[in-house]
Image (cartoon, rainbow, N blue to C red; front, side):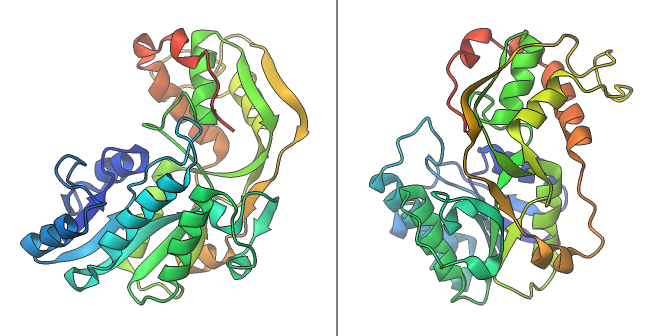
Length: 311
């Protein structure tokens, strides 16, 4: 019988990718918010009790964490309730994977190839960061929860109005200028690689409780915009015919000069765990994602991309 997984946030960006990629390998139980309010402690415990036991829990559900929703103390409280209402029911599951964030290190300062041993040297001032920090602290006290600290991640189903790579691709397809608030160095991971990493940790005993999760490839937003706008790709696997990802060069508008705080991580711990794992290179990932958006270009509307909320 397939292992049974309780997946929170199945309707969100990462939850949808996990469900799509691993749906044939595991038995997922993925209630919507209407079906299960994760902030309701009694409801969550009753849910676990009725389902008796899960081999795994993957916790992806969050509220906020982007520029569309104010980063208030209430947001932090809501997310903490959801996390702890699930984590406290550990007698009902074997292993839990929690999706942490590089923001746990405190994004108010540059994070340059930050290492796991640097955690707890700084308490984030940001409300969302403080929520992630508290979860990270708690995970270190457990023996069956793993914290995967994500930095930059991109792929299909993300909100293209606020996520930079998808935003730039959609604007390219629509013939709009690609906009960058300020250049930043990120460590971007493509979602298919992320899902493979999650699958690995479901099936292997982890040496540590927390791992930085990235590709270890430092890249600036301006460079990504240039790749989307200028760089030639072979398009033989795509649903569109073109020698370039973008058929015409579009303006790249940068609002602020210089660089904002770097946001990159050291993944030596992760690489040692994964062994011969091969990450998708950024050019191939962008080409594939561009093809996915191009195939549904009829649904893209310029008015959805007039307000820039990202970075």
